[in-house]
Length: 88
Image (cartoon, rainbow, N blue to C red; front, side, top):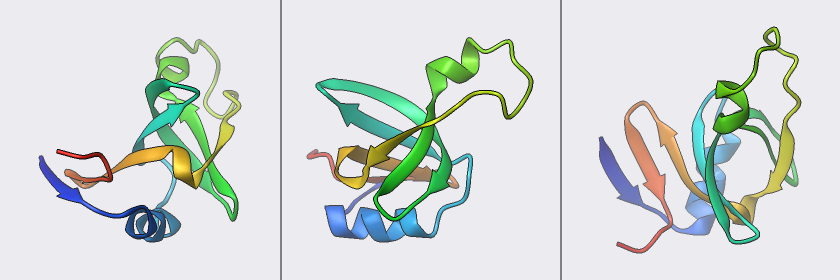
């Protein structure tokens, strides 16, 4: 897997083109967690944390996502490439 370092603006541009299911690394209130995109919106991205997906015993579509602002997204993984705004 390759890592490409991008600015916040470049990452935002990549996110605008994403579809559901892509993996993100998010930092929210000091906690980092991975999540899957449910929907990309104007003010943020609606995601489902991977911990909720793994622990779910519900039928597909029953897990409700949460919206996170773009500035809380640290990485996006698409087709084996990680677009990261984290320092080396």
